[in-house]
Length: 505
Ligand code: NAD
Image (cartoon, rainbow, N blue to C red; front, side, top):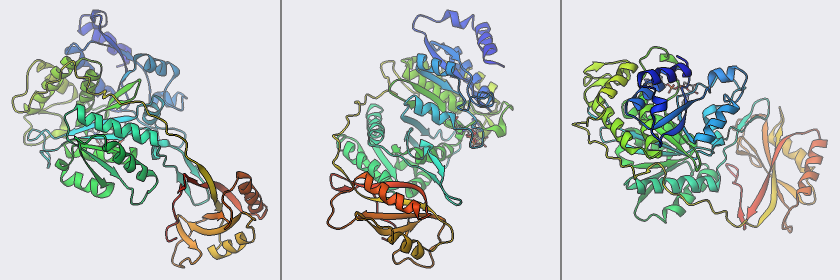
């Protein structure tokens, strides 16, 4: 069914729903999505309509068909216009075509619209949904714009590819403050930071440093930190240890799939992507092409995302009605295939599940605690102060890493050539290969690729470099028939080094 047909059907089934909305009706942008997207979005819209959500859906086409029609970003200018006008987006999952010609539309939308906070509640519905962790009730707050998802990748040599991991202070401050404000406004008691700062001292190190700085302003909230590997392991075995988890983009993406699956099914979890101007609501799962078109997908993830949307737009009364009907459906044992267990009384398809929720609108769950959202609680929008830029640090260039592409060369041979090219300002200090020191005093056991980082530092007695000194060095290296891939300036910021040592240095 096309979007247009869906609107017509909704109008027909609901007494011309679009014209009968009251004056406080809110326009929202809706994309049906790819794969199972149309099935679960249709089910969700049916429930929203039956619950009398005061919304006017404005449909846009994005995703696979738009990519294939030649829009390499997967979205048209008209769709952007709708998003910027309504500022509220209910989105079915999107397939990212494989191949380097296509960027992920999900990431593009989140970043273009500044949706910096991805809020992913993961809750067990035991005993009605089978899970090993009946007490799990946590929220993952994932940074949504930075990290390896900056999508800046390069092939640098025959053998080496690079993806840049960008972590910024404004990005860290915004997401970490959001996590603490979310905890406060949602009555949650603890915020856990998950990072890998034992390895990535500068990037993940900054995230944790900002967590400590901002955490000091929230003495009422318990705080702790896990390295992401043991943190993920504990999440899988003892999720009840966690309340709110704040983490960077990639880790958050991974652990929220784990947490959703632990709760019983990836099909259960909804999420909100919150920005200062626009908010987007979606299931955390993807377009599930393996089950698309079969009418068996669980629409709960998108439905619970739409509950978050209703709270966001001030319709907590409708949100409450829908979530309580959904809880009652689950405890009545009316389940889609992914939730099948001995608690299942009636196994239903996507449409039947939607019908079961609609039949329970107005009812309260008997075993689960009913939700009690109030219209005054705009819970998805904790107030976070605008980022205050810091005074610029005193930045001094003290060296340069020159990255070279060179085959069939030993580190000692390369060092010998580079030593001859030292300038009056710069001397060769170290060569690494894939980050590990291979000169001076490298080990023959270390495997080397064709990608060399050659660190030149300021000579003794000098206090700083100018960029022209680096260019002079590069000219010499290039004239010596060495292939320069790129350089990274080595700077101090207020005297603190803005670079790490080589491994083994
Ligand atoms: P997926 O989440 O689509 O599917 C993983 C597994 O979970 C599959 O076995 C699927 O059948 C099952 N599953 C997912 N949702 C379900 C539901 N509602 N009910 C029952 N079972 C469900 O992950 P994938 O297969 O890795 O990705 C497929 C596509 O989705 C890819 O193109 C990917 O880029 C995209 N994707 C989009 C989003 C998004 O739109 N936000 C998120 C993740 C992945």
